[in-house]
Structures are given as structure tokens and as C-alpha cells.
Length: 449
Ligand SMILES: Cc1cc2nc3c(=O)[nH]c(=O)nc-3n(C[C@H](O)[C@H](O)[C@H](O)COP(=O)(O)OP(=O)(O)OC[C@H]3O[C@@H](n4cnc5c(N)ncnc54)[C@H](O)[C@@H]3O)c2cc1C
Image (tube, rainbow, N blue to C red; front, side, top):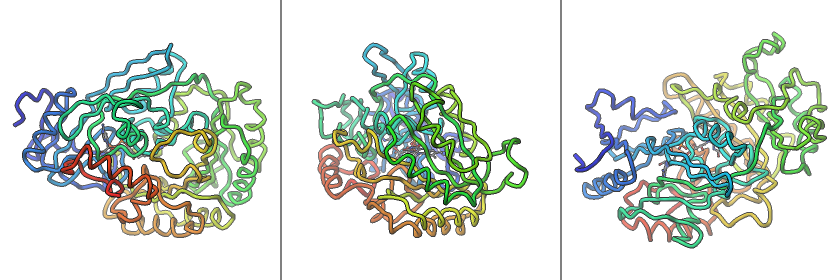
């Protein structure tokens, strides 16, 4: 079908088509006409040429964890980069070269052999590509910036089939776009990223009763307002994880979790970590020196494959009491134990005045919220309405739009566009016009200005 293609080509008639098509979110039903599982960069260029010559829409698939399933389009051609999975580490220069098909769970252990890491996903099955071409907010973000902030260069095959090594001085416009708004412009085959020393951080979870969420979160907000960038945390309202040490009356019931991550050299004794441990009366405190990879995989079970998901997110200017109470009330209404209401802080390197110029448009925000609904089967109408209700209770805190990495199923294009500022969108539109003038790559709503 594509002369010279070395990888696998699958059409809906193939018995293993569904195995190759399947993505993390079962609520996505798109059925592409062709899955092109590429063996190398030449295959990527051949698949682009085939789609172009046949007038077919192109999407790109890496880790397959995009909530809205943007790697698949009905009747389109999918360039599947999962087999581009090489890793090279230069510990002297603290740079890594990552094949675009890798997931963070394949990357972290290799980097850790050198005592190094970079800002990656908080669930190890998430793809390096989609994560890094979007916001890329991870546990190391406050200390070392977003994934795009650490992108030193990339190899990308553009709509004309050209293989470009982009960086600050080669295709600088495209390089700028890849640092936070990089989908729909071509197929990245390799990322080059800056690395940082990370050895045995102090991590763990403080688990509180849901009724204490208001007081505890408020104190956490105050205790961390001026915290150094080495401290990161989140506020998660969800059902208690299956830990026997928790009291019986909270087993399987909504609780309030505060995951903590610190790279302070004095470990558990760090006063900022200690301050968080002293807040309220946690039912469980698991904070201890931890293997970095163990922490990075510790919440994988909360996001299993083979089930249905939707999400809403928003950048927030601040938190207030009504927002916390709203989140606590909402989690009581959730139908699945896997549904979650989260708040994640920004600050540190993400918000620093000298942060790099990238498409990310919310460095002025203080928090990001994610409202994640799960349901086992069916259309999930009630659960999807739950995410909207969750978001509606926070609009008074909006910094202007959603997180591009947490845009849900069928979200309104106008809202999705506001993942970027008007200035960023206008710059992206001219880059899209320069590199994909015929619009053969499925365009996210924000690349048209
Ligand atoms: C359980 C879970 C946890 C998450 N945790 C975080 C988190 O901590 N921080 C965060 O910022 N985000 C997080 N996300 C969001 C995640 O980063 C995004 O959903 C991201 O799009 C997933 O990337 P992927 O490669 O796995 O997905 P895919 O669905 O394969 O790809 C996502 C998008 O990137 C495009 N794309 C993929 N590969 C390429 C490529 N090589 N070249 C060009 N375009 C490409 C696709 O076409 C699609 O538009 C999480 C998501 C899930 C499901």
C-alpha cells in the first residue's frame, strides 16, 4: 500500500487492527482508515506522503493517553510512533535524546541510572510526546520548569516530508511552538531534553478525612505560599486508595490526599516538608525518602486502561474556601471511585520572570484544577455532566482557560482555544501556515489564531 514502508500498516479488516488502535480512554470511538506503525523516520515521511496524495487527514499517536483521543480521527491516517523508542543519555552535558514513542515509565529508569531526571508525567504510562508538546506539568516542574522549558531541540518531519532538526537557531519559530503547543504541526521523531540531578527525593502522601479538606487545604495553601521550588504538592479529592492501614470507615470512601514531593538535601527533615506533616491530623502519613521511579509509578493504578474517562481543567488565579467546599461536595457525588478533583500549584521555575518564552500562556496562574470523571461502560452522560458542574463552581477563579493537556471529550472549540493567549495563537497560526499550509495534520483549535 505504501511502497518501501518498513513498519506495519493496518486497516479495519485486519484481525489485530483493534489492538493497535486501542488507546487509554475507551470513551473514544474514532476508527481511522489506516494505522501506520512506523519503524523509522523514513516511514514517517512515507506515511505523510501517502496521506497527502490520497487527501486523508493525518493524526499522530504516541502514548495514547490524550483524554480527548486526539491521536485518532475517523477515516484518517494515524502515524504511530511507538516503535521510535531509542534513548541516549549524555551525563556530562546533561542532555538526553528520546525517541518520540517512549512513555515516561521507559525513560525514568534509564535516566536514573545516571542519577538524572527531567520534568515528566506523574503517571508513567503517559507518552513523552503528547505530554511534552503540551503543558508538561510534572513533579519537577516547580524546580526545573515545564517539559517544554527543558526542550533543547527536536527532530520533526513536516508536511512536505522534510526532516528538520529544530532548535533555537534552526527553524526557531517551529522550535518555539514545540515547547508547549506542538501538536498539528508535523511528526516529532526525537526530543532533546535538559537533565537534572535527582537522587532519592522525599515523597509520600498525607491522607486526611474529607470533612477536614477545607481546614487542611487552607493551611497547606498558607504554608506553601512562599515555599521554595524544591517543594511540590497537590490536593486530591478522591476515594481512599486500598491501604489496609486506613481506618475501616474511610475504606472505599472519599478522602482528601496531599501527595508531597521534595528534593531538599535535608530530606524528611526539611522544614517545609515538616510543616505540611504538622497540618491537621492525617489518617496516614507515608512521607519518606523514596526511589524516584517508585514515586513516578505510584499512582499508575489510579488510571487503569480499559475504562472510560472525561476531564475538565482550568488555570486558576488563586484558591478560596468556596472552591474547596465545592470540590469536597462534588467528590461525594462522583459515581466512580476513580473519579478525582485535583488542584496543583504552579510557582517556582514555571512562574519565574526569566522563564523561557514558550507558547505556555498561564505562568501568571497560581493553580491548575483537573476534574476527572470515570465510568465503566456506556456513554457516561451523568459523569460528563459532573465534570461540567465541577468546573462551573470554579469559574470565579479562572485565569482564562483550560490546560491543553487536560481538554476533555468534545470540548467546545472556543473554550479549547483559550488554552493559549491570543498572542500565542496568532504566532502559532503563522507557524502552521508556514509548515502545514494545506492543513494535512489534524489541527487543534488553537493553531488557527
Ligand atoms: C493518567 C494520566 C495522567 C496524566 N498526567 C499528566 C501530568 O502529570 N502532567 C501533564 O502535563 N499532563 C498529564 N496528562 C495529560 C497528558 O500529558 C496528555 O493527555 C498528552 O496528550 C498525552 O500524551 P500521549 O503521547 O500519551 O498521548 P497521544 O494521545 O498519543 O498524543 C497526544 C497528542 O499529541 C500528538 N502527538 C503524539 N505524538 C506526537 C508526535 N510524535 N509528534 C507530533 N504530535 C504528536 C497527538 O496527535 C495528540 O494530539 C495525563 C494524562 C493521563 C491520561
